[in-house]
Image (cartoon, rainbow, N blue to C red; front, side, top):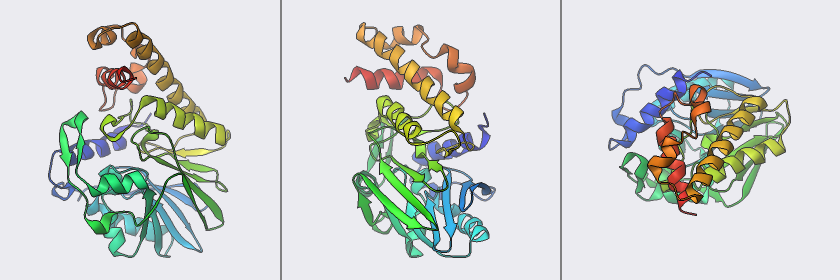
Length: 301
């Protein structure tokens, strides 16, 4: 598993949460890497969430936009793929390592589309308890101007691009984007490859939703589908299945201990993640922290 790029993006997110604005960070050394996923579909990797790109005769659709200072580099990377205009931007959720470039894109005339919960969370101050940080509201121009509750489709570039909301997973506004003809799925942060995932309970996230999102995507797709994670390298079905199974197994173990009345310290002592730590424990969410998130989540039900 390649973690360096994904982890650096997450560290920039954490730094941003600790400061008034992500523009205070230094993005001068960040390079945007372009990965061709299928004909007309690409993944851009820099700092922050992976960007999906549909490029063709009808112009360009992008999924997420990382941080504001990276907009010129992102636009240059897109222009190297296709000289047409960026027409639409879909936000997979509200976190600003995925929405930080919204204002810049909107000022260029790009139409921003997201789930209605994303617009709401971007429009008011948020508190992320996991980092004990307040996140100020985004300016009006950065907010999605088209929102939906269940699903929306784009028929562009010879493809049917279906964006659909899933039950609260990473947050309560998660959207998964399925390029049906290209057989590619962008999963936002419902699927990450930096290690144990960050589940934002303050934003309505839940481990049950994380498992359900993976189950839904696996049921819709086939062995040749390629998956763009929110962070980390491009994935095949086997990697997504392993991620889903890890989440479900640890969740079930923690849930059983919670139902037995165990305290958080007792649950940690039981080491419900132990067999997975070598593979998944190297990211910024360490095993004990992941267990604590699941314990907090599952204790509420």
